[in-house]
Length: 325
Length: 148
Image (cartoon, chains in turn cyan, yellow):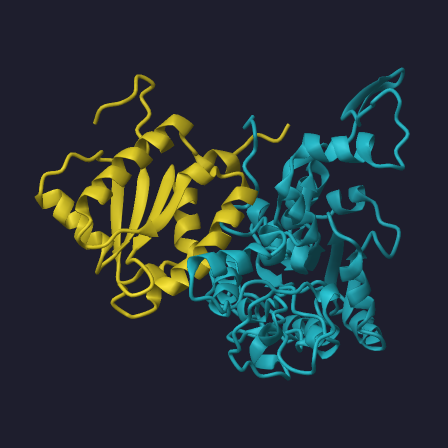
């Protein structure tokens, strides 16, 4: 704590969309309480801070750093190491830092195929010389280096020692506030815990619908069906609820969208995608191999559906690289 | 173990149901049928017990191939419909592995009854050679790849 008794707080974004920062602003008037309780020492998204400000801090200077975003580039990783050094408590905040999230789906590709798509193939690209970003460049003043792009997206926990994980894409404001209160009150659980979410329930437990264990003969994607006011899974819409940790309040289902799994694997689930795959298979109404193969064969993009938010943290981490360097 | 000149011996994990394929493998063994020594058998009570995560974990931890085998549907299952769970689940595991870039030839699922010991020995030999020709999977190396 600072001399004024306030918590020294840092916030950082790595490979993320900025939604986690919005989620903090979603605290609304409580943001004033946050300001009253904490001095923000670093928050490049919201205010003007430089990396050298952080570098100048003594070790462990910040009480808590909320780190959102995945590790996509060498810059992300460098900041992860720097913020670990300068903080007492490092929190993987939001789905990207927790388990890789949407940027993590890049693990179905590699650096070169992503570069080809972005710098050559997209319809709006005009790059007649076929130039790719260079990580170093000679100028009269000397050599300039920029960060390099990794083949594989990693979670914060895969590159640094993390104290707590706050799941969600983005974390829900009441859950964020609960975490802030726990930090201020010194009531944090054991290191390595998932905080700001249910310790023992799945999204289905929180959902207003009840599963009737109906069998389905066809799976629908959300845009292919107008759902009835009952369990979406029972209607053949793949819903990640059974494999996902509770804590969000089962918001998506209230508006007819299936759970997509952003709160990460349910407690005691090793691999969220494998658990969801089993849940999906369990509702298939087929008594012959051919029928079963036909029904499950209609599931579009199994990895993207079952591991939408957690590919880097999953058991296999990524698609096989054609050539391992 | 004999190798193929390239020094590679495939490591294969077989999840066999207690009532059918494991019995076949047992019979193949006591009947001294010639089989490749590359399959590490894990006995499960039912092929429907094989969680997809077992298969993924086998590949991540060094398996070059995986076999899941149980009782013939519709009627052979000791638990009536355990194998139904298997055939509802495994096509999706196949699709998943394909997306991950793991060759389909590394994963076999199917049915061998307790009376089909020769089929088990044949599967072991053929599958071992099939995986051998693909070379090592070495998933660990994927995770330790250099980044620059």
